[in-house]
Image (cartoon, rainbow, N blue to C red; front, side):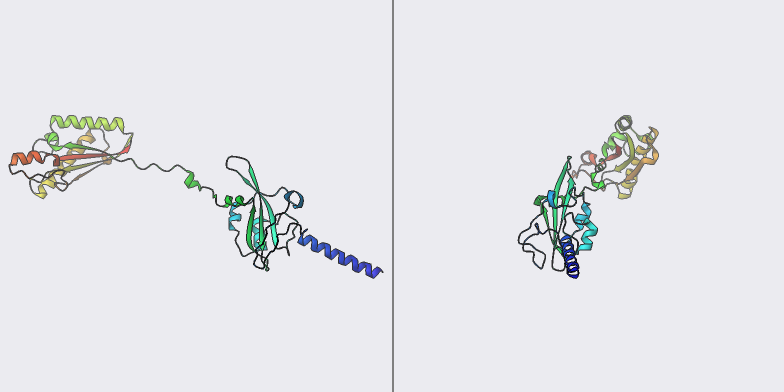
Length: 282
């Protein structure tokens, strides 16, 4: 009788151990197939069957890393042990209680289930409520994207001054500046200083009409640009911020076909100009 009692006790302990490993079985999903699917997904009672009733706040990146084919060890490494009395070895499903913080405050509580195939590889995953899975799609906005976008650089202010109003005929030096031309440049300097917080650069481009040779027109346009630069520098614009170029007759604004020279010169007046571009914060 004593031997029989010992045998009975061992058998009872073994059965109890199996129950601990496999869990109560009252919430096991129905019809779990060899490939890890269930004909009916059943979630356990979070209040009655969970050993960790308070659940956890999972790492979202770990949750996003969960994928079909993972072993129990891999799933355990990402999510921790299951929160219900299902055991770790033989059960074909693991259940969790997860909490997620809402953007506007408060907490959402969800249940999460992994179902394993016959080789104990996780294959299908389920949420209760089903919409809880949307939290995985709501990736946090990277810090770089949360920062305000850098404002695009402001377009340069462009001022065009007619060369005929700046210089005497065929002139290009400071001595050739007309009184009206000096007034225009003084007004330009005052406008720049009052309306531009910091001048990053000033680009001055001289242009001529098509009368005369290319070489002459290139030299004349550059000489006039240099004169305007010298005037602006004398008025207080930093010399290192000023760039000059001469484009001669290469960028006309108008095309003229008059045969009389005087009429042709008048028609070509818009092509004889100095363009000033101011780069900086306004």
